[in-house]
Image (tube, rainbow, N blue to C red; front, top):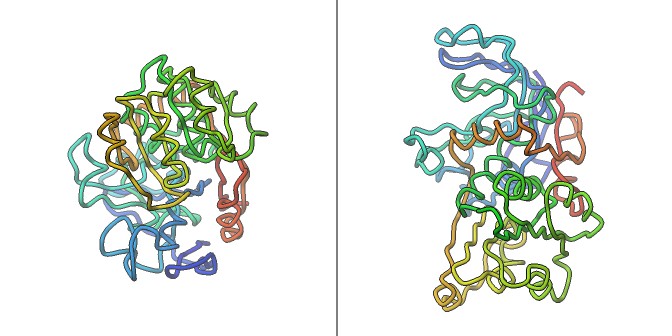
Amino acid sequence: MKAVQVTGYGDVDKLEMVERAIPEPKDNEVLIKIKACAINNTEIWMREGAYGTGSKSGWRPEGVEFPRIPGSDITGTVVKAGSLVDQSMLNKNVVLFPFKSSGEEGFEHISDDMSFIGSEFDGGYAEYVVWPAELCFDMPLADYIESAVFSVSGLTAWHMVEQIQAQPGETVMVTGSNGGVGSLNVQIAANVFGAKVIAIVGDLRLEAQLKELGATHVLSYKSPNLAREIIEVNGGPIDAVLDVVGDALFPTSLEVLKKGGKFCISGSAGGQKTELDFRTLYLKHITFYGSVLGTRDEFRRMLQAISAGKIKPVIDCTFPLEQAREAQAYFKKAGKLGKVVLLPEE
């Protein structure tokens, strides 16, 4: 089969197209012919070594074992089943839950042995992949590409909104609203949980599209008076922040939060380190949440909301698998709206 593998930590030149043997499913696994694989920050940060220091970086302390096929947002068709798998799964169109864990139900995502497809296991930048049958769910939509854009970004966004316990009528600020997680944060907070959303982007030409997704207000992080504008459009401080940016908008987030407000972060594209005056934290009674991925039950609830039309796929463009380097480079550019998807059959 064709596959793109990462050969080590570094730039996009560490991605190379190779021929690999089609993997064989174990007793509890299925073989999936991949139809689409959306790109996430996670496989780029894995390649760049952003999850650790020195020679070890990955979801687990020992780092990634190279070469590794990246990719975690995967849809496809089951073409072979292991001996312990119900044969009715053959020919099913599925979306993959993106990690394995021995954690108890509801705590899978914080288990010490949480292992990620595309990092600890070969993933979706290929024509085929094997994965446990119990972690393969029916696609929420009929289209492979549309169904492939939710697994990691959607689960991350859903868990973030559940973390802050968003309520109808509350105001939630979403940073990075044009990205994969951010655009889903907007939809989930507004259309599923009923919150009022202030979407933060760089390019205000995306305003109409973000309002279609559910945003009440759209503001630019480039404004020199962003904090004042947020408070003005809301008529006062806001209830919560869903952040994927990190340092660049951290001071603004703390400034606009009300007393008793909530701040949830699941990314740091705008800077991994920041300064914090603890007095702001305790004098305003702010609650902090660190958030990555989520639980299987949350994944199921998300898929139901997608099937019900409450959350819609937001896709910027597609690339053939052979152009994985170009696709990852494009993914990092500012100004796009939604996901970038690799297609192995194109």
